[in-house]
Image (cartoon, rainbow, N blue to C red; front, side, top):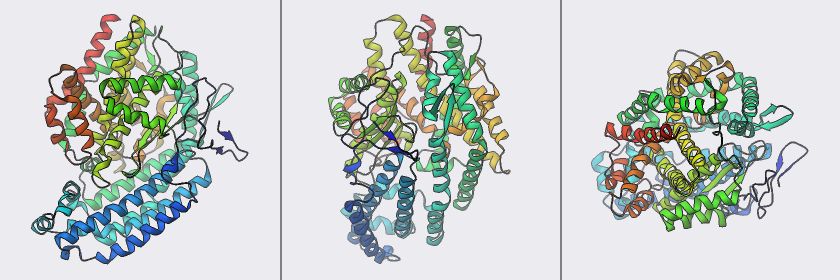
Length: 610
């Protein structure tokens, strides 16, 4: 177990000791970050810093000379750049993962900040290389790319070139990078540390924000109501700070977007995702047009099941009556998910097993630990790490399936190398949501009890609503906030107004919205960590609906092999090329409507058994 120390920080369990849990979830594993570095003061970390500083000093000899490099020398320079980028990425990954274990620990916070500052300085010295590549005319670049060493990096160069019209001078690019240390990065750190330190008073209990939010899925309505009230109070107390952070970062983004000549707040994200504006617009339109047919219809059903004329906001994730409300032990959850992957592909299941056997996953929820869940890809020479806050709910099981999908994807794409293995966010959510679908289908097929089947089906519908409808509503919130910020600083009241209106529109008339729900926008960390990230979840879910239908129908020969190939491609191809082997095309407006039909069909099935 991790013990609370006198200064309020959490003492970490030994690296070879799994954590226990008071809720009888069984031994909960901790990750082993020694696969990256032995510790913040480790000789191996110091040696990598020394090696990469020397390599960068030598690499800077090419500053101003990229245009004069021979094709062979150009290919060799990209290789050196990749090696340097990988070492910088490895160090940065370790610092982030180490801090996420206890973001309330000031020692970890200082190590993280010091590391980020060093990496930013070192990374700034490399900026000239990509900027000079993008200043080459097409013909000169094509000549250099004919050499095999350079040609191997064609996908990286291709994607680098899309930023040409948005790049600034060397000095301005370096200034933006260095100012981020005292600007954006610091504000996000303040937000994260504030969330981690928050406590919610629920009756006589003092809970972390993660624990209190988990109570919103309790079977007992009074427990949900009490937890919602406590979260509202806690978020309300921090509202002035969260409002300030939101305003500062929205303005910071607007300033940079203006310098880079991005027409809309979402434009830079679309470009990073390698997805056309019109594709995102078609997705958003299809989901918003489906609100009545999906979310409004389902929550009206749920209100009846719960015996209420209207749902309160704390009922949104309430389990259904007569469902099995037991907490699922960790070992059972692990076996459920691994079995679902194995039924689809033994090769994928073998990768899943490594996260458990090699301790690439941190599971226990505890004070100070970063909230939520993620799979961090680190770098190809290492392996991904998964962070969870497992509390035994069915949703936690689906979160495990989701994050393992990311992890499998990251492992398979690793051989592409540091510069090509990364996947745009729109496709990065494909493997994770597909993993959820595999797990859900396996559980549904094994469940014969009618009430439990209904509960499973309803749970899947709610997960899809959370992944698609709720994320597009979040996207709508971000869009309105960033557009409104252009006219001046927003008040807490204005942010609450935007939030409440969007919630009413997306969730529908089955809900009763009270003022206690107004501050709930402020715990959605994606708004600050990665502006306009959220539509990628909806993109991935709708895409997976079509992808899974192709698998289930048997219409695509060698589906599993093609799926492996898609994940292993990393960033080598764009979404149109990756989906073509499955007969899918995301540029087709009807594609998104077909994706939403899967959700609507599930609700049809629920209505039949209601």
